[in-house]
Length: 393
Ligand code: NAD
Image 1 (cartoon, helix red, strand yellow):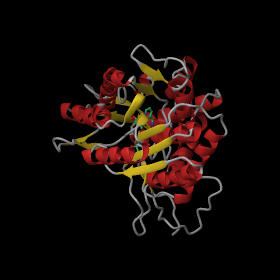
Image 2: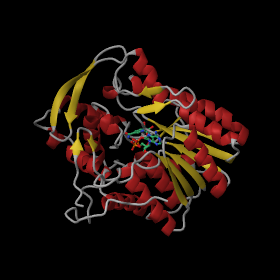
Image 3: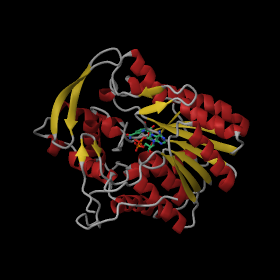
Image 4: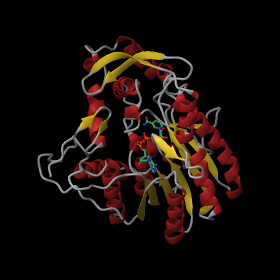
């Protein structure tokens, strides 16, 4: 079939298998063009199919030669319905890793469940014995609690008061004012249950109790801080509450893993165009301005560049891992540079529908958004019939 993008709001309901494979290969090639580094050897990535988790898996596998086990929740193709981008990414990653002689296995299913944790532990026992790095990179709109069966939803809302600011319709380029009503107590608690640290802790405890964590094991999860303009809807909003919980969990896990001579970290990553960040109001406009500034200042990074720098300059740099006063790794350091933030704030004050194309990198945002689903990649002929089926494993 011929596969074209079908964009509905902030998601694209189709994905292109060859385009996704191209995008994965581009990340692999970028890593391979750099010196190999030593660090992780046997790695579990939870949330390994897109965004930061996929980039972490690629950096570990092709940068450090690690064996990787990836857990994610993706959908295969069915009839004339394409698979999800994460499915195609993972199929392409597995094939490339194996061709390069690196172990790669994937587990598709709900990582919040006990069943997927058990399956993962069995796979580690069977194939790897023990693992020395656990990357936790889940982003999900909902979670069913494994013990109570209760379902929680995560929302992206301010807390306490209505937040009003500019936002952009990425496809039409219309810049409008948006009012976001504050979250209820139930929504705050739900977001924390989905995106906080409870499931990360359940993973680490389950892996530890099963005896599959190696001496010196490390674990890392990802957080975001961002600038004052997005604080009401991000850092001081429902998702920020969840991130506070995740960060507190990181400190507790760091204590817990001392018994294994291990450590837990939370890394503060840069704002990135991913399926998850596209869903946050206000953030795509901020990213469009941020990318414009960072590209002009020659300090822009994409997902793979961020994760490669996290591994080589922070986690495995042969020195104590540098952290801020709250124990977080800061790989968002270039995004948060004063000169970058001052330039973004100046653009934010001016941006309108009329000047959006000129003063922001909305064009780059749209390209990257399409790339997430395997569209708009060089060397792919999108007019050619393609088989949507791709196998995993
Ligand atoms: P993403 O949407 O690209 O990836 C999410 C991953 O989670 C996918 O692999 C998906 O399959 C998996 N997943 C979702 N629900 C699942 C489930 N129930 N079971 C198994 N797997 C499931 O997201 P991302 O933007 O890369 O975010 C990853 C982490 O990085 C999140 O914690 C996010 O808050 C954080 N982060 C993101 C940004 C950003 O700007 N994108 C910035 C800083 C930190």
